[in-house]
Image (tube, rainbow, N blue to C red; front, top):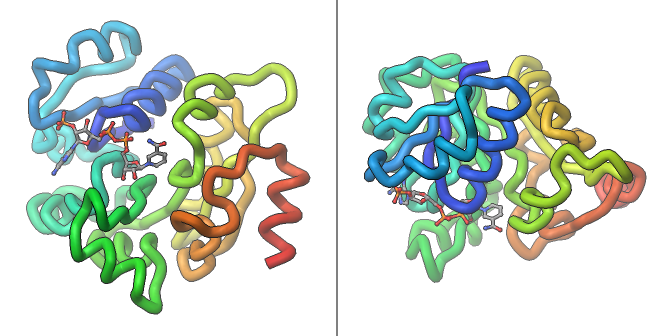
Length: 210
Ligand SMILES: NC(=O)c1ccc[n+]([C@@H]2O[C@H](COP(=O)([O-])OP(=O)(O)OC[C@H]3O[C@@H](n4cnc5c(N)ncnc54)[C@H](OP(=O)(O)O)[C@@H]3O)[C@@H](O)[C@H]2O)c1
């Protein structure tokens, strides 16, 4: 798959390296793409450094939102002509202390953070995954040959569901389907699945004993 990474920091950088080593075509982006040199070198021949605009213009199969939550409004508006029908894989979390008032509004609203993203990127198909994982687990437990770590995910439709399940499994995690976007409250910060570091059986139990 062609995967555009929006925000190549701790989480986006690590995910992109994993997917590149699994054989995907990874387009890292940054507002300062010249600073992506060492990341791209580490990720190898399947990865490239780009501006955010270049990545959206490249018509990726999947866009991974791995930047601060507050950038969702601007990016969804600015590149509205580019991401229609692509999968938006939202890994962001709203943190008022970092993202300001809009994040507090989403935390207090009667919809989930993933539904907010789906409303903003309305012509795409939104899925949520990897927002609950600890940065250290993402780095160290990928491609685990022992007991696999389970990653919860939710998706808006069948295409985004299959795509994201594949992306989770391609880097050596077990995928556990939580439901559609209206079911993602348990994945939000401070909720039940947030920061959980368990195998598939334990995660299934946590998801189904709501
Ligand atoms: N860290 C965790 O444990 C963890 C776990 C799961 C989910 N998350 C969520 O994942 C997201 C990324 O977290 P992180 O820890 O990877 O953060 P990070 O290391 O700070 O990386 C975020 C990247 O986003 C880019 N960025 C910042 N503002 C932007 C904007 N307005 N437009 C476009 N790109 C922008 C920055 O890249 P440039 O300056 O190069 O453009 C930066 O490298 C957050 O929403 C976070 O809540 C974090």
